[in-house]
Length: 348
Image 1 (tube, rainbow, N blue to C red):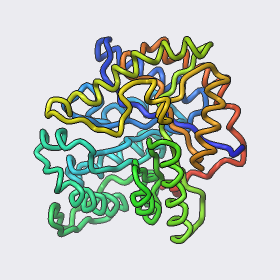
Image 2 (cartoon, rainbow, N blue to C red; image 1 turned 135 degrees about the vertical axis):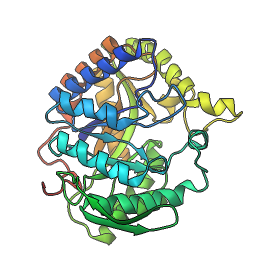
Image 3 (cartoon, rainbow, N blue to C red; image 1 turned 90 degrees about the vertical axis):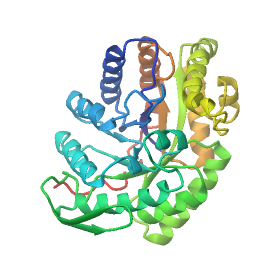
Image 4 (tube, rainbow, N blue to C red; image 1 turned 180 degrees about the vertical axis):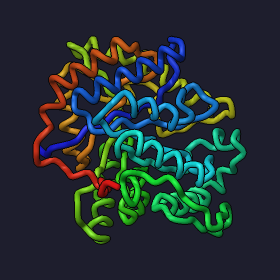
């Protein structure tokens, strides 16, 4: 059995509790994850929907930086078309400095045309804006003076006073859905996470490593799968506990799409369907351990990212699930021979 690293992905989606309480519970969960030995805490960015109560990930992650000491963290992903690149360069540098070099830089263009439209961005223009913004951001993080003349952004000899601890920039991450996207990420030296079913993820991973080995080889990158997780003492208790919470999450995910009479078809509408298509792992510690091993072996991934709190799942139930995972599941996979995280560059 190959070793693996572990992370948490969090939409910070709306539950029934007050927002201030929700934020505090999330921070407590990150503290617990750090104590348990998780590598990374990843946060989504969404707008105009209950799916994302951290629409400004940097603000929330600044609190994470101050409440933790070891766990790495970052957005998965910053929606680059929504930012002024210069402003984001400064934010990334601040977060990396405030955390002592623990920031992970996830980037993307955005998957919801409705969220982008509400922010005044044409979905068809977003890919070009993303590519150009990323070019500017990576150049700016190197420090010095920034000059860029492009279609969407223009900077002339801007002095960059803030630089990150990690040079030339924090480790890069992307979410991927296709083998072609995985190959592009590999050629750029970017770590990836995917949510596709195991058979599809196997194709993604194989194409990623094919492109990675053709590019350069070198340190083993982080190649992850993301799954909804809930652990309880028995399979029946876990299924009962996760079913409504998953449906609440799904309703939040699709609410904005439904307002425009459409739906993102690649997401499972129920927990039962999610289990069928390998989108969720729910059960007793023994069941979950076996399922995690199956998912990792079937895909070839070396990084498992769990969604441990979602929908209306209470903090108490999520914390108990995380505790069972940390005590009875995760140690099974932690071995010294695990992958070396890609892009943990030299410190400042």
